[in-house]
Length: 483
Image 1: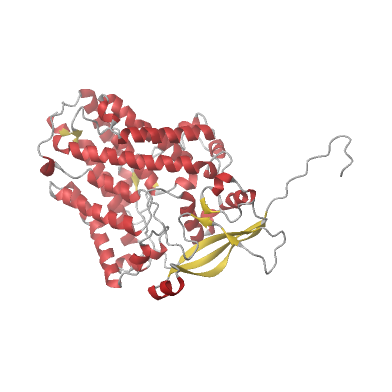
Image 2: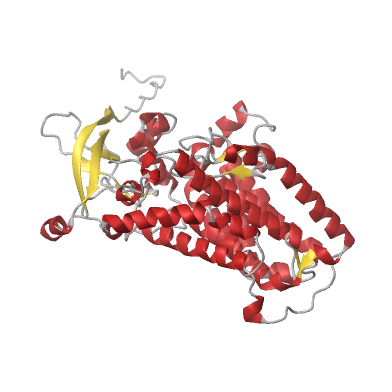
């Protein structure tokens, strides 16, 4: 079928596939390095406990067959290795069917990880990576030109990402409609980056232009993805520019980068590259598979599409257990005040008014007022992100904060590896407490006088001091008179 393939999109497919492999690599490395403390057998929310109270139907995946920390690590590092192979172009050297199987491997592995990740994997970019990765399985390789249907499905996904985010803003916080949200957002976003202070200090008229440009890019430009070239390429280019602006202004894991990857797949590079290299016709079995997958995705798109037009629109929701077609969106409401949970410990056995408390340092979230926020995206610091949610409401931390503190009191190595600074290198503290502070960016005068990027003020207690458990004394042996 001549209509089935688009010869001019060979470079678009190549750029998309190599970029997606890079995102996969970051995701798998993050999973491998952080899982033991978060969801390992002795973690804050152990996977074995989840598996006992849920079923295959709730969350299918490889770990339903077997789970151990060693097996999880094997899955994560295997995903990273396959991602490196895809990044190096191994799929292009394989027959079409084998290449599809190779692309299916990271999708199955990451799906299995997300299914047991619980709150640590409840972010929209997890589903976005899975949905993108599923479509990538059917994009083919050099054995055939890129299938038109899959290219359109990628645009449909990009449309839902951008348009859904735009709608949730317009329907949500009134500051989006008044063009004032970015007077707060650069300061109160989950994890500011090294340039966030400078973005926050931009003049108010510039912030209004930022918001207005965001509305145009998310509410108008997505429709242009379905127009003829070069208009569709120009629309994708505008999205790339907007996403790069977000990359510079904050840390949103791989959300922005994956959106850029999707936008690049919509660009027609043929005016720059000239005629496409000759490619074989698609085999019949491949055409049948792609058409079937397209029908499946369109059928599953009904509920996400209905959600877009609903007044009760929800964001970042999966409508099927395999995360094949999802709904997206972010920041339907904006915090006006930044609150942070500061975790402190002391090695004093008895707490009194003069007790000296030492602060635990986190890698990404604000802590020491003198420390300029760092750039971590596309890497995802899951604990740091959840600490931001905990400051918004203790309900977000109900399931994991207690176990987190218990592991600090035990000096758990895996948990301490998630932190930037352990103030008790000689052994765990006797007590730990958590307090909520209000953080705000300093102005230029304050920065010059104090050297602090942040000013912070105590607000309330988050958790009163908790003591280290006293080890149980072993029972006396026979003939031992000690009591």
